[in-house]
Image 1 (cartoon, rainbow over the protein chains, first blue to last red):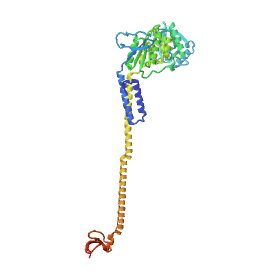
Image 2 (image 1 turned 45 degrees about the vertical axis):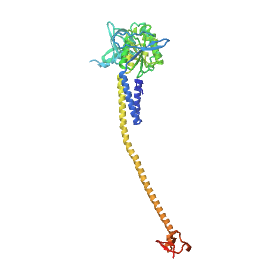
Image 3 (image 1 turned 180 degrees about the vertical axis):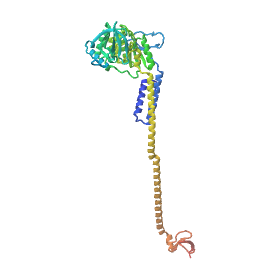
Image 4 (image 1 turned 90 degrees about the vertical axis):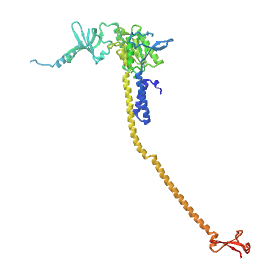
Length: 90
Length: 401
C-alpha cells in the first residue's frame, strides 16, 4: 500500500471500517492483529495529513474553445493590501 | 368594604380577555420607529416602536422573525402588523408582531416579497430539498469576488479548520447588474468542473456585508434557480448576521457570513484529530480484549490438547509396538519350538533306519582294508587281506584267515 496515495477521507473511512470489523469480531487472532496494525497505520496517516496539510487554492479561468482551466491562486495569505491579480472572467 | 376584591392575576386576566375581544386590537397595523431591538438566543426578537409621544412594546417570535428579509435596525421606520396582548408577568401590554416591513415600502422590497412567495410556492425552499454536506469534503468550490475581503475570510477559515481542503475559486462579481449572470456562470463552471474533471463536494456562495441594495444580486431569481439547480450542495454566506437573501432560502445550508459559510462547509480538523485518536484507542482496546480472550481460549485448548496430545498418541503407539513385538517374539518362539519338535521327530525316524541301529543288534559291517569297499561276498577277499570291521560302538581291523 502506497501511503501517499491514500487521502484523509479514504484513510479515515478505512479506519472506521477497520474498527467496525474488529467490533463485529469473528476473526482469528492473526487476522485481528493484521486489522489492528492496519488501523494504527491509518490513524497515523490521518494525523500526519491533518498536521501537515496546506490549503491548496486554485481559480477557474476560461480557456480557449469554451474550456475552463484551473490555475494556482496565491498570495491570499498576505497581510498587506488585498489586491490579488484576478478579474471577473465569466 | 368593597363588594369584591380581585387578585392581580384575576385583574390582569380580565384586562387580557378584554383586549382579546376587541377586533381592532387583534388585527392592527402600526407605524413607528424601532428602538431597543434585541434578538434573544432563542431567536425571538424584542423591540420598542415609538413616535414622538408614545412607545409600544413589541415581540416577534422566532418563527416569524426567521422570514424577515432583514432584521430592523434601531431608528428604522417600520410598518408592523400584529395583535395586542398582555404579558401578565410584567403587567404590560405588547404587540405580537407577525409582519414587519420597512415603512414606505420600496420597489425592491415588494419584488423580494413577490419572488420569495413564488419560489416558496414552487417548493424551492422546502426542507426536503436540502442536501446534507459531505462529512469529509475534499474539494470546496467558492463563488465570490476574488477582490473582496470575504474571500480572504473564507480561505483563512478553511485553512484554519480543514487545510486538507482543495479550494476552487470561481471568480464572480457579487454586486451590481452584472453580478447575477456571473454568479450563475460561476456555479455552472464549478458544476461542470465537478462533472468533467475533479469532483467538488460543496460550493460556498458568499459576499461580505453591505446595504440591502449591495446584496441585491443574491435576491435575483436567476441566482436562486442556479443554486437550486446545482448538482453540488450549496452553502450561502451573504452579508451580516441579520441579512437574509433569497439565496439563503434556496441554499442547502445557510450561514450568516462568509466566515460562517466556510466553517459550515468543512469539519474542524482538531475535532477530526480527536476522532482519529478515539478510533485508534478503540482499536487498541478491542485488540487488548481479543488477546485476553484468546489467552483464555488458549488455556482451554491447551487442556483439550493435552487430552488429545500427539504424545498421548505416541505413547499408545509405543504400547502397541510393544504388544506387537511381544506377540512376534511369542510367535517366533512357538515356531521355534514347533520346528525343534519336528526336528526331533525326524531325527527319531532317521535313527530308526540308521545302519548303526542294526549294528546294535549284533551285526557288523566289513570293508576291505585297502579298497574300503563293503564286503558283501566271500569272493571279495583272499586270505591275508586286511579288513576293517565296524561294530556298533567302534571299528577294529583284522586279517582274513
